[in-house]
Amino acid sequence: MSVRLLSVIMLGLAVAGCQTSNESKSGSVSGISDSTAAVQVTSATTKQPAQKNGRYYIEFRSRYALTYGHTYVMFGRLDKAGNIVDREVAGLHPATNSVVPYILGHYIPVPAETGESDGDTDDKYRSATWRVTLNEAEYNKVVAYIRKLQARSRFWQATTFNCNAFVGEIARSMGYKAPGHLLRPQQYIVKLREMNGGPNAVGYTGPPG
Image (cartoon, rainbow, N blue to C red; front, side, top):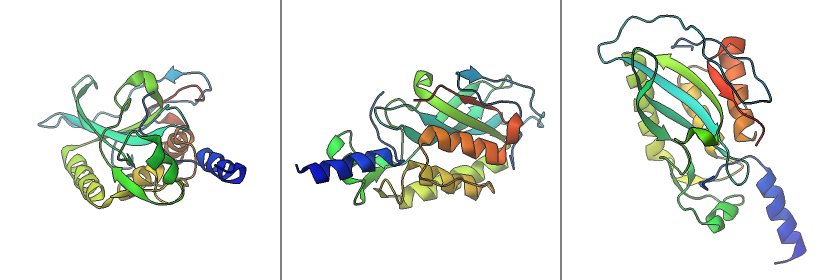
């Protein structure tokens, strides 16, 4: 490999994207201040009328990885205490754990998957979150949009349609603003939370990854 090609690849890796390696407007939101140290904030939220099937949520998340990380959403039901009852993950990433399609994806579109990847549900890897609670009708609308987005998101490309862009489309479908998709995943989620939930949004910010 020439020195020039290697330099181009390394530059591409510095651009925001995502990988699969291990490593409200319509809802109610309340309480966090960002910090460079890991901090979990739990504060009182506006009470919603009890739903027949419980409360629902969508959580915009980022996690650490071997490079710059990954952005995705987690969604499902909460119990009366606000604890997660069930969860599903949606996020765009190359359809393999091989590094080859991941590197190629910085130059050309590569086949993608839109479900869970390694580390998505393990809290020790999360780098930032923003949770929005929803009623049943709002939740069903969001899930229907996610299903459609998954069906048409067949390719991943680091600079045009990456994991941030995928999550941004979900946020915009809910009426939220979304930051530029070329941020690092942790920066993207923190910015998304700041743009829409303000200083009192329920969320988490871990140390820089």
